[in-house]
Length: 229
Length: 291
Image (cartoon, rainbow over all chains, first blue to last red; front, side, top):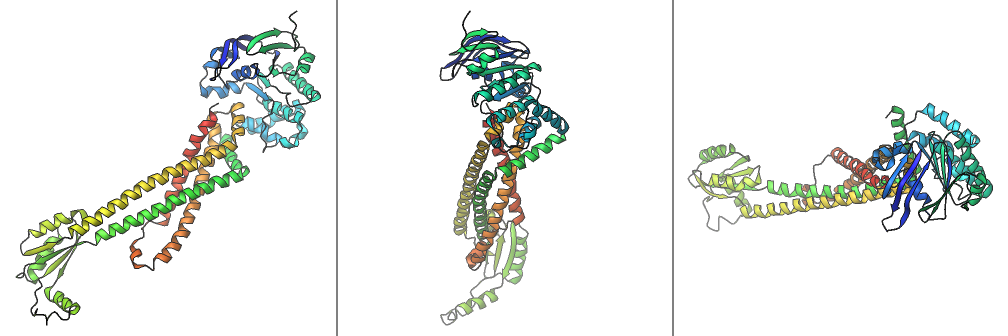
């Protein structure tokens, strides 16, 4: 589903964010990408949704080399992905329903289709009763669930989450991660960048570790501090 | 793109304007002011050009006949001149009438020793194209029965030079003000886009095509441009009628008005506003689409 082959990213100021990273994530897998701040987690994710290009190497998503996409083809790549951020990125002037509808309208969905998909997504994240609320009226956990619902409305094959629990307390973080697992169980490949060791250790999923841009660990049923046993 | 998408895009544009009311107001007033200044300058420049053109149009070529020439010969010559190209009108001045007028303005002339009428018959020629004045004067000078032709060449040259300066300054001023207006307006639009960069980024992340991001913002730019231009036109109309009322009392200034129609001015300003609004949005969005 996702594969990186010899990927390096060098910023213009000479900083190397990724060094010769190769890995692959199978369809339907759930994987954490862990590492301290600045280790290259976000950079790796940004390569997947083509917000940036690698200096070297190839990045494949759903069998397609995304480094070769023309700018006009990038939107169609992103429609296959659901992306969730630490800061939720909800539109503050739109209520929950409108936020989700917006994501569907901008890709040209029909009104009837929009109603159906929003209903499904809100039920999935348990926010059906909040559809008239504006982001500032919701708690952090609710906002992140709203953001996940927005990522789900397109029925993405891959869900990418960049520090989805970074702004949340431990209990809420756990709820969010469980929600991500449910989405994974339903068939989506889920990739979560995090430095939250508690949830990583509790989930016992694949753990890919980055340090200063180098791939330093990749363990199935791993933990945050990997012991190379 | 299906009909419901088009409806959505237009709806998005107007929702955007409504929800970013303050930014919309800032953009529209910026557009109104810069187009207002531009429009005012255009009106003054048109007036100045109109004025110099009307001064040039007043120049006449005076033809003095020889003393022997009589009424009939003068009239025949006038008819002949009247048929020449670029001659707007000819007027025959009889020697008796001119002498009577001369004596009226100089009552002592007879006692000064001038008993007999020394004036010849003469013809005044109005030329339709001032640049042809010298040519026509030379042609007439060679005609039979003509003693002298006065074409006011030097005065005309001075006025035409002035007209050229006025036209040059007008064109340069319009270009500078137009560029300034484009710059200010596209900056104002850039600010409204900056205020909405979150929205643009989210659109991009959920897979909106660039056109889907652009269209509502361009519609916004067009609406801002049109409304701003209309406001500029209102300002100019109100200001213009106030100025012309106070100016109309000065006889010199009577010619200092352009004959531009209010509807032409409105059309030109709104077309310009719409064009700058659309182009400004289009160019400014590029920065936000690149990521």
